[in-house]
Image (cartoon, rainbow, N blue to C red; front, side, top):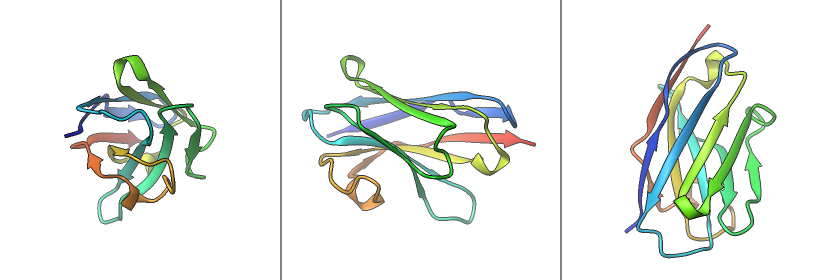
Length: 124
């Protein structure tokens, strides 16, 4: 069973940076993708970024493109989300998720395992 543990959230001023980490255990497949999603209070969970395990192809939501960078370390089974130029609207709980397939990885339903989430708060 895949288990995901996020870390790195916190409180930061607008314009600042944070790096989130997601350690994956129990992964027995080398295909698929890892994604980051976020959920603000009263809103639905939304896609942020995703990266494929095998070749590192990444996709981003328009709202974070150019500011956030997703990366992975296959040897450490860890995925990162570097967040720069943070804005107050980036405030949310951030979740990492695992997908066995690399198809339709922008869709939340493709992800079968989720972490517990880490809070990111950006003060203006």
